[in-house]
Image (cartoon, rainbow, N blue to C red; front, side, top):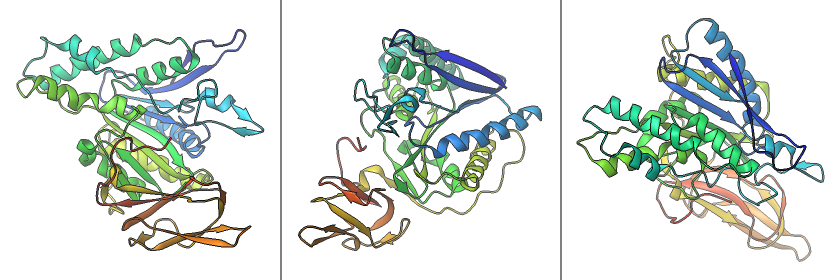
Length: 372
């Protein structure tokens, strides 16, 4: 294992922050996978999964079973871990700018397209190598005027040329689920099985350029720009994995999730040896545009009536919202039939809070599909 320390741009004199990446295997010898945890720094389950992945990957490297390179970023957001407000970590938004740490990653499409224009051939492997070289160069040239910009540039640089990118997050309270690009779902479906996902949400573009889409969506766009005569496959499979809820931090969960990721990497040929048998699927893929939130129409106490993971019908009562001063009880009902996969941790919420989400089969929403 090789440890690399990446110094981030110093925003305040005397205050230094660095990112650490762990590198297993041999760069360029085979496929590359990048795994990172807690880009939203207060989403802790991924940090424990990364701990168990470190142990497994070190053992696999010692056995000579890593066919190419695996990069593990055990703490993807050291900035967020330092942000404390009245004792609580604020890891989703940078306090200086108000920006979400998982939004606004650089779109390298035009830069890469300009670099490869006139150099592509009928050889897909040649084209993939050419595009990856262009992407590495473009990522290295991203401005890093602030600590946040520096973090984004470093994370993108570690992942932009990878075959597989897994971004480990969690929800407020949720069953295990994932987000990915629609066109790569066949390559992601085994991961959903190994993890035991109960929802898989697909979109070509979800909005605001999150980390995973900055890595993966550039490939189909380049293919469309240059056409079939110069084939460019979707050479990066990027997935946001939601490791249940914020308080689901246990060795039992983390060990199981780490092994599922190792099994998937073996399935994809990043780890040598016979891959594990695929478990039965626990969910079907549905559009992210079919994930429908239910917001609180007024403030009050949330009382859930159905458990997470339940298959629910449209109009089914999932929670009560109790206004304790007036005695008003407002039923919160499922907007669609589907899987009740995520809900708010807090049991007292102000008006407008997104209380719960149901994954339905029909794409009903348009525009920005992500929460803030």
